[in-house]
Length: 369
Length: 161
Image (cartoon, rainbow over all chains, first blue to last red; front, side):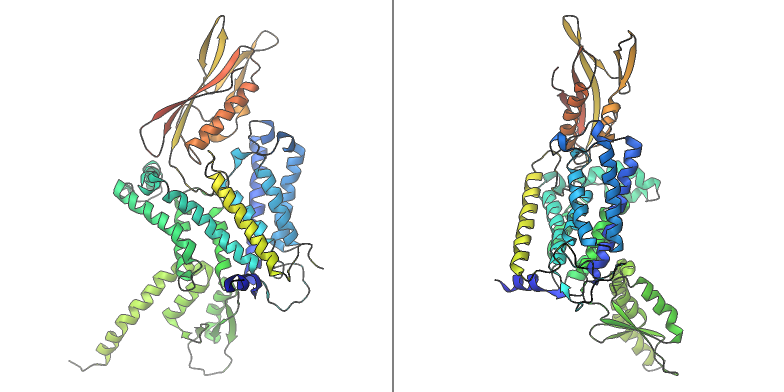
């Protein structure tokens, strides 16, 4: 058996992150099922009107059964979110959801299908170990990660399918699709404050072609970069910006939030490998880090020694490097999900400062006029 | 209390087999889905920026001949059992917002081919549920703009009754 295959199938680690993702998926499942309850109330039962089932018509549920199924889906989503028998609930939820998806292909959406596929994969992960109302029996703390890695691979499969289909489409490569989209929705963008000149510029055929190639390169590049250790953090940042841009400019239902939730799986499983050290004056900042430290990257270490001349708060990275000031902000942005979109700009600012700082210091300490 | 789903297998081989089966299923679904008109399970996001504008008519018997009667605001009238008429709406059977918006351009979600595939089936459904014995078929003339190209017209008819 190849070494990488053996490593993948036997790898163990801290399951906290996959448990957190499970809770998020539970929330999304509740939201999706709730939305279909609203659709049922607003538009009526799909089975009584035109629909195109994948299954034989006899397998399409009746209205009462469909309504029950929707509420069962909400219940399953709640169990998943709360960590109560989440693995069984994930399996049941994905099976029920896929069955209902097949009852009317007119209602098919990629984001719904993706959510159900991820729910299926997470059912095989140790996602019931933490972030749960129910205590599991004590374990070593290291759980199998193979299903989490498979879910990561599923993220890349989606990028490969989406980017690959665009690469094979001459209209997409040539910028026709994006150009037309920018032209048609330009007035909407202008009405919400985007400068008209910018919208017009973006819709130019040459610019649209460049943007199209960039979009294709992004999706296909992420397939590989997300699994490359040195490129992963940058790939995650670029992916976050890519999806946030799509979210702002298009209607994609839950897909942005589903993908960003799955991005958390790419964080290292080990938790509390970094430290936030703080004195009494830095307690508020430390609290802020606590609030935003959804992935449990930091251990908190208050400094009790009086008269300590150290900064009020400092972050210590995995390798022992101490970060204060702007460098601390860079480390915080790299590790705290809500600040992650600012990581690259802050990192660039820190590098720029490191370049100009020596000359500033030299001017300050050099010979006088 | 243990989970009913196996938490851990002492057999990495089982995990490898599971992964192979899962990936093979994904590859098959994506490959076949890409060839379907509505791209089911193929994860093709934003595949087109196209619009369709559906114009509907009903072809009915008129004595020895036939005539096509355009729908008015998506409605038509049929005789009822009491000798009067009642109004039917295309939207009564076809609830999908893209397919039931008539006589104005709408975004073709998942592409033109997906919407034409669904429309053809919708016309069959509407015809099958139309109580008018004189109905022969539903007829759609669809103005298609594929990715901003010049408009082209596609003609679709339901199965004749």
